[in-house]
Picture 1 (cartoon, rainbow, N blue to C red):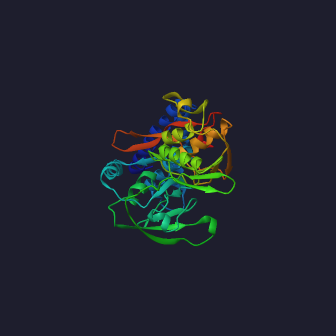
Picture 2 (cartoon, helix red, strand yellow; picture 1 turned 120 degrees about the vertical axis):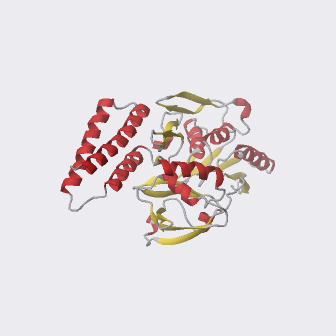
Picture 3 (cartoon, rainbow, N blue to C red; picture 1 turned 90 degrees about the vertical axis):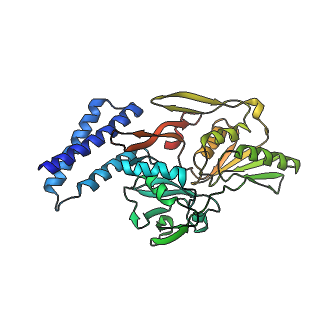
Length: 351
C-alpha cells in the first residue's frame, strides 16, 4: 500500500478501535484481545478491498459504512458524528424549534420511522411505522448517522424539508414528500366510554405530564360508570421512560415495574408505590409496532406483574439511557449506556 492508503487504513482502524473498546467497556462480553483480533480482520479486509477490488474504492465511504454498520448492529439508535457534525448537532438542539414530528431509528443501514407523532406534519403526510427515508434534502440516508438525520429534519417553523419515502409494506415506489416544519404539540390523553361499562383511554405519548392526564381520565370514566378500562398505547412512540413508569404505577399496588442497568450503570430498581394506585379493577393494554420507549415500559410492567392483559402487535423496542461519548478529535459516539428491563429480566430495547 502507498502512504495515503496506509494512513487511511490506520485512521480507520484507530476509529474502529475506539468504538470496539467502547463496546467492550459497555458490554463486558469481549476482552481487549478480542477487540484487537477483530480489528486485525477489519484492517486486512480493508487492505484487500484496496488492492483487489474491481475499481478504486472510496475508502472514506468504506470506513464510514463500517463504523455505522458496527453501531447499527449493536444499537439501532446509536450515531457516530464527526467533529463538525457534532457541533451542528449540539447547536441545533438548542436553537431549532421546528420539527416534522418523526421518531426515528436505523433499519438496514437506512433511517427508519418508528412512528409519526399524531397531528404532526409527518403524520398529516401519511408517514407511519415501518416507512423508510431513502433521502433527506437529496442526501442518501444510507450510513447517515441517526442524530444527523434528526438534525436535518429540524429547523425553523415554516421552513420545508424534502424526503424520499419508501413504504415497504405497501409495495409502492419511493415517493418524494415535502414536509413543512412546525412546533410539535403532543395531543392530550383522550377518554371515552364504550358499551359494556368499558372506559377507553388513548395515550398518544409519554411526555411529561401524561401520567396526570391518565389519572384524570380514569377519574372521569369512573364517574361515568366505567367498571373496566382499556389503556391504548398504540403509536405512543415518543416521551420518556420515567413517565411510562408513572403511568404503570397508577395501576399497580406493589411489585417491580422495571430496572435500569448497564456495564457502568449500577442496577436501579423501580418499585410500584401503593400510595400512587388509583385503579384496581380489570385492565387491558393495547400495543402496536409504534409503541416504544416509556409506553413499552408501562406495558411490560403491567404484563409481567399480571395486572393487565396486553393485546395487539409486538412493540418497537426502544427504552434506554443514551449518552454522547466524545473522542479526541471532537467527534462523538451517541449510544445506549444502560437499558430498561422488564420485571422478568428482558431488555426492552432488544425484545
